[in-house]
Length: 270
Image (cartoon, rainbow, N blue to C red; front, side):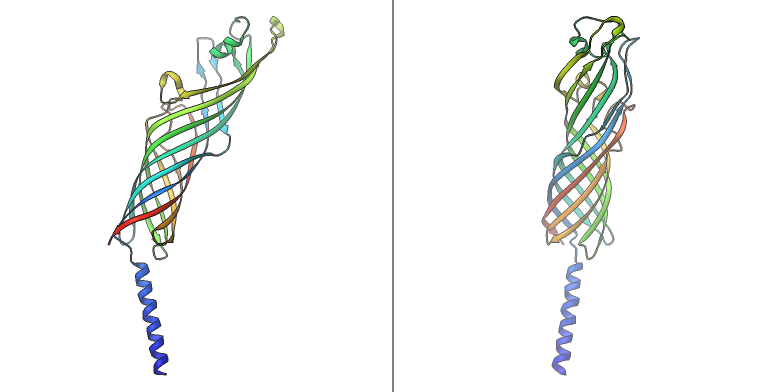
């Protein structure tokens, strides 16, 4: 009986000690993080006046699938009794894939359409039908400041906060095809427009026009994380750039960025 009591007491003391050890969380943690980004969204561009009598129609760029990029960062986490604050500095790439169909656009509203015509025509007489796909790539230095809480002895984390994006590069690769529609009233035949690809620097006002991208914006980021083994963590995040991506405030739409990453804790301070 004494041996049984002694064994039970020893088991309880080990369990209590193990639980206390599991709940012990360092005051400061430092690590690195890497993973992939998954971007989706749509963009609505309002009509643009080209001349006094010619305008471009509204462009509704729909989502064309999920764009894949990457994320890499260093991070520091300050733990308090009931919450933690985590700051990061990282480099990220985001790829937005879109498609659009334009039923009618005056050929005088687009220089490339005019070049496809065998003769010049007055505005309002000849229109084109266009289909386009695009991939807009953005590279940025990200600085998220996140406030979170731990559960299950620190193994599960939830957090939220602002993410500041300092854009380093942004380009759009666009492929366009279609036709110039016939106008029987003036004897104009249908003309096929061969597929054409081009790349635009979205940080250049001269190249991008209304689609010029901001060199700084901010997003709201939410996430959850879990510790697989000591020093190794998996995080799932979702961010929405609430500060807007384009300089022109008349452009509307939605951009959502998901991130899946693996973190490794390099060292900590008790």
